[in-house]
Amino acid sequence: MRAAVVNAFGGGFDIEDIDIADPLGREVLVDVKASGLCHSDLHFAQNDFGMAPPMVLGHEVSGVVAAIGPDVTEFAVGDHVVGSLVQFCGACDECLSGRTVRCLRPEATLRAAGEPPRLSRRGEPVLAAMGTAGFAERALIHENQLVRIDPAVPFPEASVLGCGTITGAGAAIHAAGVTAGDTVAVIGLGGVGLNVVSGARLVGAARIIGIDLNDEKLELARAFGATDWVNAGEGDVVARVRELTGGGVDHAFEVIGRRQTVEQAIAMLRVGGTASLIGIHPAGGTFEVDANTLLREQKKVNGVYMGSSNIKRDIPFYASLFLQGRLDLSDLIASEIALDDINSAYAALHSGKTARTVITRF
Image 1 (cartoon, rainbow, N blue to C red):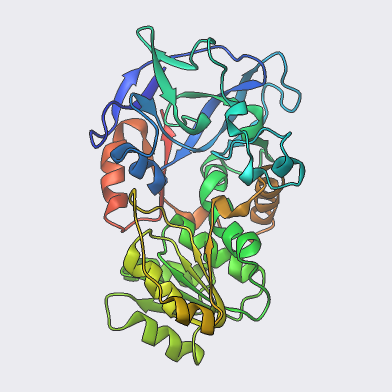
Image 2: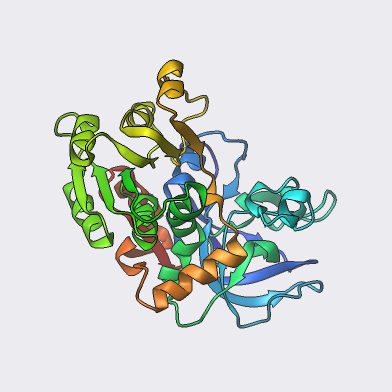
């Protein structure tokens, strides 16, 4: 099958023919119909976060079940499914408490030592990154990382449910616990940031301030529910947010992964506010905060992973909201491309001018 392979950090994506194994145990073989280009995959392709080339990335996957392993109980051939990088065993204390995103044994979703690799090239293993490896014609995924969805959801929209939506909307609804009447600022209005805006709107936030350098994204945030918008390149962002809200926001979401914007998020909080950090930082990234200010003003800093989501519960929920017309997924998608265009599409994404590009031709 054709796949986009990362052969060296910073070397881009090479379109190659590789082999995919038959499903074992609880694995599901998926014909990939759409795969979103999340910025996280670009981070992983350029930097060593513990996954070694050669590897196939791609974790926003939607498609149709082509075959199932002998122990699969949840899916059947022909099901429409969404894949997610959230790997969970289903049996540890965290999983049994419903906090699958905190699973203590995520490796339970992978093949055991001694079993043949899921992906290979000329007999040598190729890493199926994050258990999804969606930048390919087919993906072999443990059933815990898949969710069945209504076939009425188009594949491109379905793909963004697997990361962008559960991370962004989940950050507002689950991780931060935004409630009706709260004030919110969102720094960075890519695919995840726009979903934060959607999530804050869904729970009734009184004011939602979108912050970005790109005026087109600021305008798009308005369509998703932002009540105010601030161009980060024009003046003091913190002062502007404080002016708009009369002293600061209840919740600030940092969706970029930069020291400067994290510190801005903390600074724009009102007394008792929470800064939720979503963006991936470079390895070893740090930020500074005045401890006494944090104590005196009772501010909180909240590390958010995958929106604190339970994918089996939340992905079908967001899909139903989309079908009801209450959650915009279609306007997240800037363009649909072929697998061969992945490098140029990531170059455009890196420029900060697009929300989400989705591979739909393999």
